[in-house]
Image 1 (cartoon, rainbow, N blue to C red):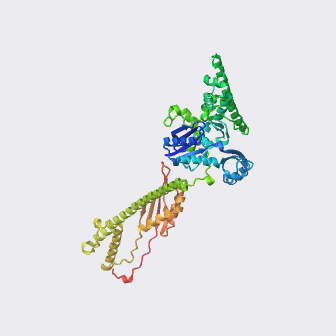
Image 2: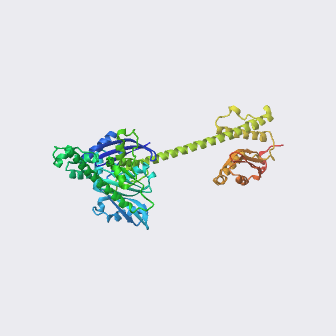
Image 3: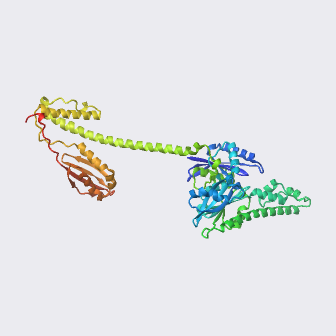
Length: 588
């Protein structure tokens, strides 16, 4: 069972998801997360990474991290090529004119082809600064992780949503990832990623605005943002608003209402901006690709009232993505809602590593490419070696099967020769000549050697002794007796004819039940898959030089299976009588 680990290092949370199974059938086996203190530096993020890796007991070489899209520049451009290989060769030169803040040698480029128009390809370009990539790799290396691949969080999120079946029911949808410092927008048309945006705005930006509007510290503003339209703590707000606590309750109600209105107004401003960005992108979509749903994920999606206000603004169903679903084996029931909201990117990284269909963008290129080359090929090498061993095993099985078949055929022929020689030839010799006239030819029956080849050699020697005894010592003249044609030679010729690949290809299904061989006639019985190839058997028999005439018998189709039984005979030409050798001597 395959296993992969995805790691998402956000600005507020570090999330780790372990997935096991196959690309089509998988399950989350572990989910671990750690919160990063607000305003903390890279050291706190690195410490949180180490904590989740240790808690998950994760194999460092199996970790697949994501690069944050916060620092990545995205541009949609047209290039005069359609094939991905051709686009990759020119994408750096085509993208250079669209990158105003970076030199082309200071970024790593990857792309996604999203469409075609007038012999040009519409391409979404991703340019990641090398400084951001190095910082992420150094943080990972400090925790023992040197990943072979570095994907983009947007691509991982799309892979996770696709693997969860989000685009099966709603192929034209928008995915909103509401994070702490970045809001990612994915635009999916006909199930494929068509465009994406990354807004440098999230819950932390809302916290800063609320802190300024309410004149409170960021911790109080952050708590107010989490509560949404809930009531604040009046005592904390009175001090900031320079109001006296005497004479309330009416003042307490007024402060709560003012604070709630300010909070809701800022949240609405945030949602309006998202809606405006989505509407601007959807304006270029074709009419038959109307938006049917909005998917929401990210930690900020858990804030009270966010989903309802998004649904009111978009006037479409706003759905949460079930990344973990209700699987309490990996996540406690109390954490399911939070896990479903924040685990998407880490899950997508793991599924990409596992080979699930989706999108992989690679930012370990050029001078930042993975340098441990053996690790790059060890999986492919192990797969190749495994396939070679499997192939050799199959060849061995085929060889063993063929050997058993040949041994069985050889035993059958040997048994036939044994019965013919012992029961007929030698028995007749002993019967006719009797005890007085016959020669001692050696062992017979069970006294004969067990080795097949030694036994055949012994039979040949005994037959020669019989021949010499009858013709030379006893004076019988064998002139005029026709030689005997070898049944083994006839059987070999039939096997050669019927075993030719040309003949097999023409015949299709061809099964021989019995071959009967005499000095005058060869009979073949069997089954055919098609009646119309029956004449081919006669043609092959007629090609044998000592076959005189082919006699075709009738064929009969079996009621079950549709096979055709056949029988065919071939009359053999008589062998020429050899003249006696004058030097052999002998009388009548």
